[in-house]
Image (cartoon, rainbow, N blue to C red; front, side):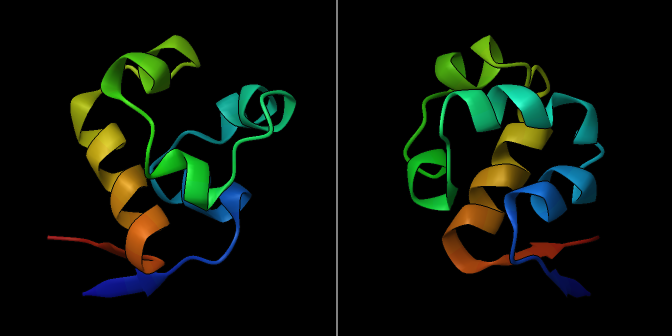
Length: 68
């Protein structure tokens, strides 16, 4: 099953990280930038869980999140 996600806010909500939207906005992070960010960079702005980092990059790459 896949869910289309077209906004940064939607991507963060899809992985349960709506609370950290502000750092993404203040750092001017968009999908293009997010898919290139390292684990360290994502962790620094609050994405601590490896699974969340993988899922966010997946959304940034193909606009979808897959639920297993």
